[in-house]
Amino acid sequence: MEVLDSFPVTLDPAEVMTRLRNRGELAGAVRDLVAEVGRVARPKAVYDVCYVDEKGPDWVVVNGVRFKSHVLRVNLDPVNRVFPYVATCGTEVEAITVPEDDLVKAYCLDTIKRSLVTAARTHLEAYLTKRYALGQLSRMSPGSLADWPITEQQPLFSLFGNVERLIGVKLTENCLMVPVKSVSGILFPTEVKFENCQLCPRPVCEGRRAPYDPALAEEYRQKVLA
Image (cartoon, rainbow, N blue to C red; front, side, top):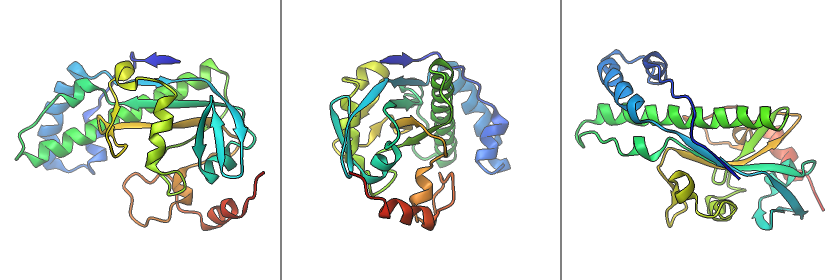
């Protein structure tokens, strides 16, 4: 297990403005918040190198912890080594507050936090790829698909022990993460890039990274594994 907490923090106001669809009226708030966040931001991640112990029809056991998901089972069929992870924007940024009635600043701060956690995960993937001489990586996250519900956060977090002590992320009773701008899941090497979005038919999703592929979704449904 390893904690990464020295990610370079390079917040570009222009990039944040792009995420905000270049709404000119937000420029001042963005500049102020980028400067404030830049002084304290410390995104973090924790990962572990784990091995698949057992595989069933719709479940896998990773380092003694059982995960129930047909899609995850299909994706890990040719894989024995995986990299569970949790990444976060950091508690330091979470401590920054804006006036409750300033919805513009709140929106800008939320966007900046999202940029930080995305950068943390990107740096984590690059670090793993280089350190372990990996090729292409794909990932799955509890709650991204109905097949792997958010309640699977609990077994995922159990792989690390006290995640709050390690990087400041805790689970609520509803298995949501705090800080909210945190991500978790299992990274695995793959020849063909996989995105959860390919199997998700939800028509409107701000975070969509790939179009819904009904043929691929049907292929996953039909695949039978022992």
